[in-house]
Length: 203
Image (cartoon, rainbow, N blue to C red; front, side, top):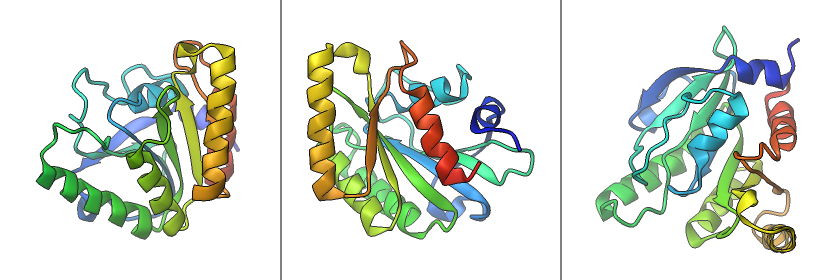
């Protein structure tokens, strides 16, 4: 059986859904990536798969309003899901509420969902929106891995302090959650993230 790196290398776009009800049947195994609109989530996915244009990046936060699925195998039984970014204030209240409902349904009801990677800017981790997502995943019984992105923006002392504080907060919010540092620029943390995905997808 191929290892997780081989599966990720073959990642390809499958479909884009405007809401939970329009997603394809929840068969196989799926890992979702969530995060604030400016957390660098799409760049993380592109770095992880070594596919520069797999997940579309945008200079306009909050632009992506779809659940995008990417297949990792020919049978489409192993997938990554790129969830809409949350926490962007300029998105109107009605749309924020609608996507809050859609994400709640996805996290709590999607049978094939094996875990959620929550991408955060290491300089501003665990915002109120992030905390709500962690708690939602805990409530839905979904494993959580917090990915502290943009670690290259901080010096080693502040990085260590940020990781320590996040782990302390997670011990209260979701005791089983894990976290690691990540840098798209320096390709730091790829091995740790791949190990998490390998365990969740049983590859």
